Image 1 (spheres, rainbow, N blue to C red):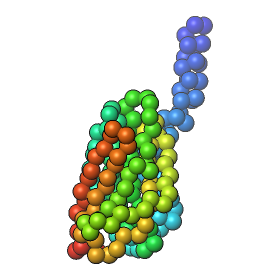
Image 2 (image 1 turned 90 degrees about the vertical axis):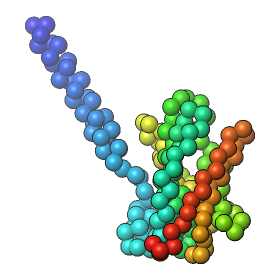
Image 3 (image 1 turned 60 degrees about the vertical axis):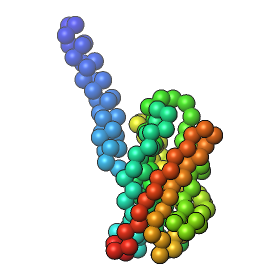
Image 4 (image 1 turned 180 degrees about the horizontal axis):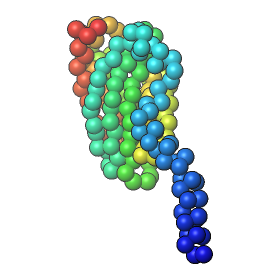
Length: 156
């Protein structure tokens, strides 16, 4: 009788955990890009700059993925992997500058929480087509970093 109860409890617990397991597996492959951005990327209206830079800030890791240059805006895509509880990453402290010294205004942003951290999308003013290099600057109290991103004109 004891074996039947134990096995029944194990099966019930597995059924309860199945949705969480499916969510964790599928979440690893999703980017949560807004539908209209995905459509623009697929239609070729977007110039994509691969950043592929990683910054360690305290115990957190910020992975800068891409900069998407659209006709009317610029999108910065990055992930924040939290390794300790505490402060949340202030995306408004990021700024984008070009090689001519122009600073592009942060307009809005969004993020979606994951079990491992969050995915962020920050919107900035549109970049000109002749930009050669970009700089991502971060300054927040005693924390700061700077990433230089070359823009490959041949891919446009």
